[in-house]
Image (cartoon, rainbow, N blue to C red; front, side, top):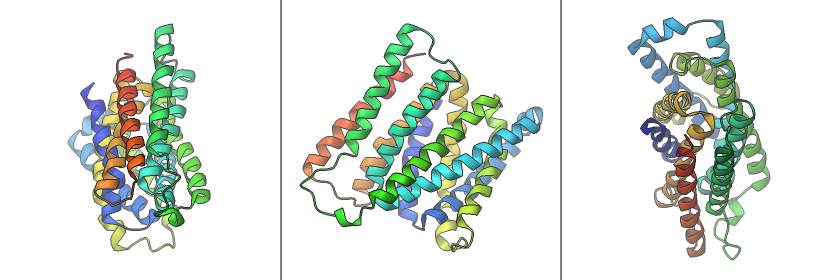
Length: 286
């Protein structure tokens, strides 16, 4: 169960690390994929037997497709962060991912079969979504930074990001491949997708190379998330991984200087506590 907490720390830090390192959304995505590919190569070299034992066409199809979906999800999440800020984009994105991935786990993979699981799982998801929504709730009296928010662009980016992240997790489970062996093909798919987004947009700049660090952090969380999925299921492992919004939200305020009013800080605190409660409830389902 502990391995499911690694993505919480790793993925919760991605927005903060990339925000500190800088670069455009396309540069951040490409740099991340380079770091993820480096992590995948090291992982494969350390455990070559596992990769060779599962190396087949299905593994490569699942990995590359998952990587392409991920590049869409991450690229658009970075665009959403630029449009409306990390402290708003991440909680909304998290809520959407929680709902879609949990529904996929239940409908496609029949992970919740008993009445107790369905009841508690539904309550947990509602708590998580409400908590995510509260962390992004805006104080209507606040005017600081309002002009810099582009919600039209942000909403489009968040929708595309949710679709990408859903495909990234579902295709792996649908094709039922070994998660650790798939890390290398997946990273290649990620680089391919990110390269398309960055093509002709100052890809080989300082911001891209700096975000290799972000990719190494993300790769650690990614590997642990899929290992946790094999142990406790998609609905639970993915939902737990998304509680990292607590780190993203408070970190963006404390470290990146995103302004919040006193009322918004109350919303964020309550919302973060609800996210933790919902995550714990999901973790206790199995």
